[in-house]
Length: 213
Image (tube, rainbow, N blue to C red; front, top):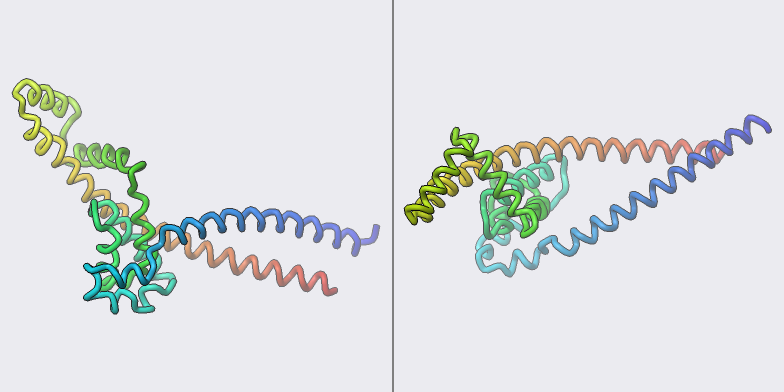
């Protein structure tokens, strides 16, 4: 077998492996795009929202819907913040706050979906634990307070003071940390994605040059 044949065989094997990876990537990409299309608020939905009508012309500005390396991380950070801190009306709140922050509105709206009926119970537990730790409250004192509340029929006081306060503090902490983490993770992911696209293009260009020779 000549060196040229071995080179062609090696190139063919690499092409098959690359095509398999491409098929897998396309499958995941198609699922993600389908989920985005099902859940992404449209321009029409923002325009018809009675609460957003006074600001609709600004929210629908093309600069807030353009995907850039700065607007997407800002949108994810905003979505994390509003998704945690605002229990209702998260998408309209994200759209309004996107104006001064110059954040991507679709990215902010989609990110709020991480808080949903399935994740909310676990997130509330997380908020309480973080808030409890931040307020230097121990689990023993919380349990003792609960027993005292049962004995004294002071459930509302216990709920507001010993559960509500730590949960609220935990929500605020998680909203800030989630926004910061979302921004930097998305910025890093954007850079990796752009780098992957450039490497893929370079590999395809090199493969075409080899096939042409």
